Length: 308
Image (cartoon, rainbow, N blue to C red; front, side, top):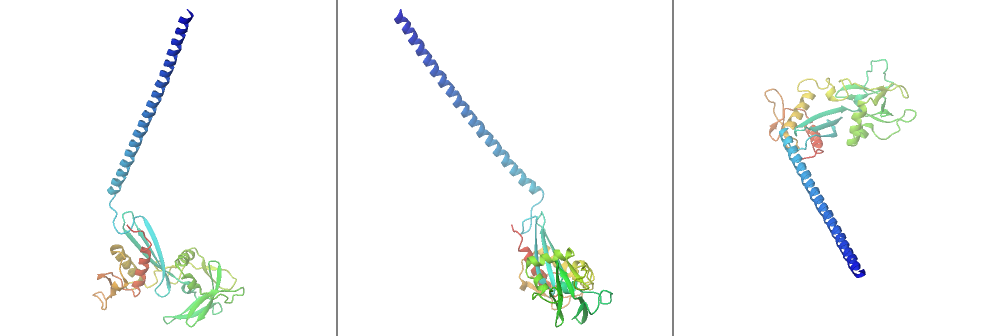
């Protein structure tokens, strides 16, 4: 009886172990199946996301095509500036802008330097020979304030022959600096860009007396502080603005990738009495003597653009 009971117990234990082993194996198989299933789901999701991304890229490309193809050698939606000493006495500025469609826009301007901004009316009550300096230009006599202020620093005028220079003044109003203000302004791209910003903000002014009130210069005898804002500057015949607009239009239509040797001014007048500049045998419509100055200035600005 005891042996029979022992055999029954051993069988029960054996069946229990087998059942337990089966349960563990089955559970492990289920886990592996779930892991495999999850891996398949993750892979499927990755494929779906990748497909959506590629479709979006393809859709974006077709949308830009619907807006029109980009033309021209420059990347769209960018702007660049360049500055230089131009026409023997001005701060030249060229701004080039590329539109969304790749089209080029050119804007040329010139700012008057201190020897022009400092000019005053000698007949007014504020000015006399005591607080001005006179100089000759193109056979005309001009009177400029003896003291000027630029960017919070006071300068005093010094005559050298027929020209006027401004150097930094000491505490008594006497010349102390050895750097000409205009040369400092024309030193580099940054100093010329700053000049445009400062005179536009009223940071250049004249003083009727040293230590006195600063009168900001906001106009000139020609109009504004730059030539495009000065209708009184070269306002007859072809005019300064007319020549500049002709130069701008030529570059906008034909680009600026030309050498200076390809720029030639006609030796004889045309039917309208004009001696026009041509670039690579294409007539520009401009007649101004310093055409190359302005063209080169624009070329410097174009050189700062990113190309296709």
